[in-house]
Length: 458
Image (cartoon, rainbow, N blue to C red; front, top):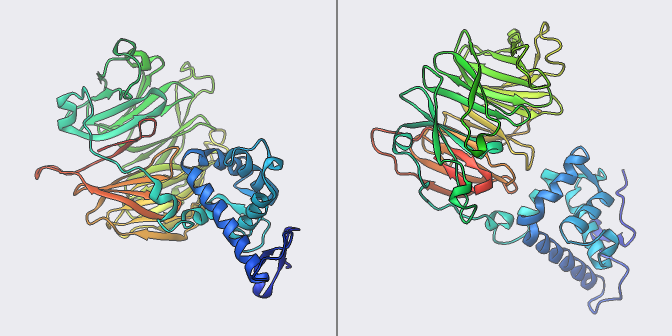
């Protein structure tokens, strides 16, 4: 198919683009091409310099249009949300021509549309210092204020509840957990803040997983004694204790939890390898109680313990599970809970790691799936296929945790020896690595990311 060129450009030998609207440069066509390329590079550099603060706005244009923008949509989005113009008409002719050339650089297959992944890849590689990866702030060690000594000494698992700005610190030896409220520097006065921490009592064994439902105002926890608890956390952000609303015993302990807001459904992953849906009344009431559905797709399910559950796409009803047999499975949960009698089907199953998957997460920044394994590797996948995009091998010990920090292009990983790596999803590079000092009799077990505080808790 013939490549569609913007009106201001015409092809020279080899398919290169040159600006034909200006005056002849002193060096002829080669001089004019050099000027046009210099202008394109200048606009690219300007985009990168503004990227750290405005790229989230730009990404929303891609999300609103199904992940792709055509040339006019791209120019309008960049001109308004990145360059700060009222609309595309407010940009200079030189800038518009440069943006068309940038679009052509990204649209290497001349499809007439570009994806968010392809654009960020170009931006990440557009400066000698490593592009946007070099602009990331490095993490430095700080102490969490007012952290209770017991919670810090025996912390085994960490779960951050963003809607409540609460960090749940789970004790690896005793039942219960500590609710810790991080405080922003220079924020409200101490009198206006909730207590720095409080205990969550109700489980008879250590808590294995926890998740927050913003829509329902609930926190859901599971423990090693095969019990699920639903807590009413509405108002907890101002210091009110979480009220236990419901407790359910299950056949096996559930190690992974995932909330699907579109279907008002909780998914749990058990040590028996099963993934189970739990339907919640849409109005948030508990008069009808939470209903457990059938195990998802017996034919395609795992017999190894489920370690992680993550929604690849809530709108498309796609759920991803990882297990200790090293497999990633993609589930079509469309239609739940109406068809609990017909278990969801396994769309795709593939071996992601040699020794087992311990964690997985999707970066909403780029839409890619990141997995961490006991084989010391972190892998990046196209979420709707079994295609591995790249493998990171910075870790020297089995991975224990992985988290994509919401609202940033960062993915954080940790291994049991204390190694922590920060990856930039735009350039798919490791931008920082450091080691947490761990006593000989202990090992690092978990990390939690606090996006609103730009902090990592290990």
